[in-house]
Image (cartoon, rainbow, N blue to C red; front, side):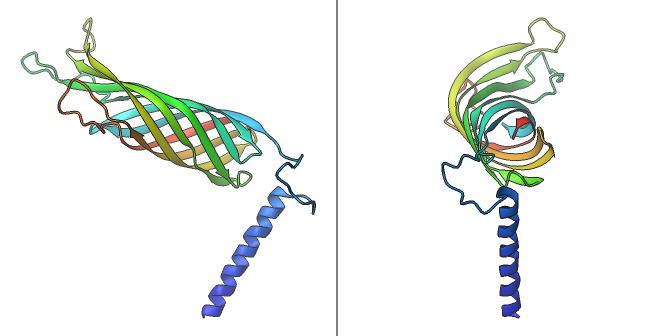
Length: 214
């Protein structure tokens, strides 16, 4: 039984290697680091995402632009904007504030290794790092009033956000991806004692749409 299992594993590995050779190499020429057959490209993307920030549902939207080296490594810049607690029409008791919202954005550089990019379904591992800012906004009244929000302060932070993306090659110039990332920031300090310093740390799930030459 063990011999059969080992044989099956060897066959599977051989098949994988053969398939990859078939995808990337069309002849028996030796491939080198400085091969003239390398091909570069670029893409632009936008994303729609969901996260939990300060225990509330948050909407996260973003965009990226990258240069692609030999189909397998993207390097570029990107940014995201977010806001939590989108239900602004709260009930106010004795004219007291119903709460506060957190809004802001962050962006910087990213590097994205892409595994088996020519496969119809494959994975990539983008890692973004840079700076951002978050604002604490108190909800003082209903939407239809003149100045419903009061800024309680802003803080600047550093961040790093590694991700795993499962990509689908829809067309030669278009890809869609399901992305899961983890946002990790420096300490956040705002004028609200109940807000933790790691309030922005957490998972982010999003759909990404990419357009370009891959």
